[in-house]
Amino acid sequence: MAEEERQAKDDKLKPIFRDLTAEDPEPETTQIESLCMNCGENGITRLLLTKIPYYKDVVLMSFECEHCGFQNNEIQSGGKIAEKGIRQTLKVSTPRDLNRQIVKSDYTSVKIPELDFEIPAQSQKGEITTVEGIINRSIAGLEQDQEQRRKENPETAIEIDLFLSKLRALKLLEEPFTITLEDITGNCYIENPNAPLKDNQCTITHFTRSEEQNHMLCIFPENDTALLKPLEEGEFTYDQLQGEVLSFPTNCPECNSPCETNMKMTNIPHFKDVVIMATNCERCGHRTNEVKSGGGIEPLGVRIEVKVTGKEDFSRDLLKSETCSMEIPELEMDVGPAALGGRFTTVEGVIAATKDQLLSSTAFTGDSSDPEVSRRMDYFISQLQDVLDGKKEISLILDDPAGNSYIQSLSDDGPDDRLKITKYERNYEQNEELGLNDMKVENY
Image (cartoon, rainbow, N blue to C red; front, side, top):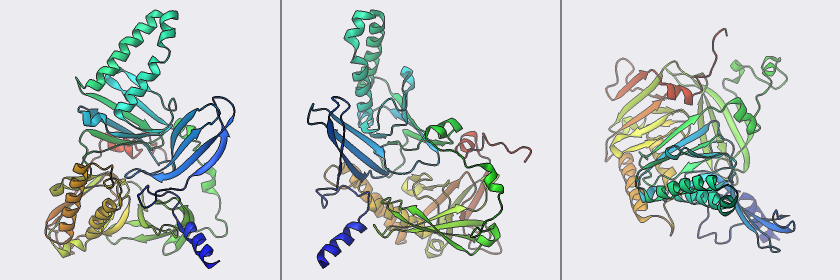
């Protein structure tokens, strides 16, 4: 009985979304009897909840009907809808680019501007594929009814044949071409074969969804009049929130299991109020702290550069907001805002967190990993360790268009020679990502 109770407790503490590893040769799957859309009999759908490294939790679905032999595979995001949509543009110029892995959801549209070609969102199911796989699937779809078209509409069939020859020519790479993925849920992904280095051939931008796009995702704003209602018992004013620790139910960002998040508002001296949120998951043991600005977006963006030369610089307090990118030129490292999220830590803490995130990923381990990528990753991690050991001096750069990031100055009565802070005017693209271009602020 004790053994059964221990096993039940261990099963309860297992993450819902788990990595596929050699230590787990038979991952848990859920089987559901479901209707076959081909013959009308009942078949079996198998669900596997797993994780894609450097991406997010996904649900793999495999359907098979023993009556007619029909099979179907799909992938759906297991995470929440992102706050913003995402647009990724890849310049395809080498065979290696054709082999890049792509994850697309049901809401991902694909465009190839050179051919004026678009695969609308929801016309294809979510899948894990490659750039070449998208082209092959498009060719197969257009060829499907060509014989019938040649009999009924020869002119249309000839035009499609000409277009098919252009699609096939893309795979020969006689000329570079561009492929763009756009997803209003923020749940699409293009592999970076140069990771952890910056992908110079892929441009990633985020955009604020329109009201119509939010409605497509069943996202509706709360009634504005609710903001004007009087406080009820148990509710707090802004001043009362100072110093109070609030708890609310949420899901673990690592395994998606239900857990509790603690939230507290605090003030960073010489900076501003911030909201610190800490999550501790009992299932997988994941701990996280996230920081969000307690105020609005600043009038100007900020670029902060600090020379890290010793332990004194490692101890500087550092606030990285969720809109802030980070760069270390000496290591050719350039990571976007989503890499570490928002956090309040130290210079040493943010470098260590970057190293830990790379070590915890399974993207570069296992039999299927690219040896060159694994070698490059090992070297990069060793370089980060040299920085933490004080063997290598670097420049750490935070670039925050929202102006909500901060690095502590070590000089109270004068300029800090190793710290440089530059305020700048945001460009149109940065304002677009922050949702400011469509924001109405007149007559308020």
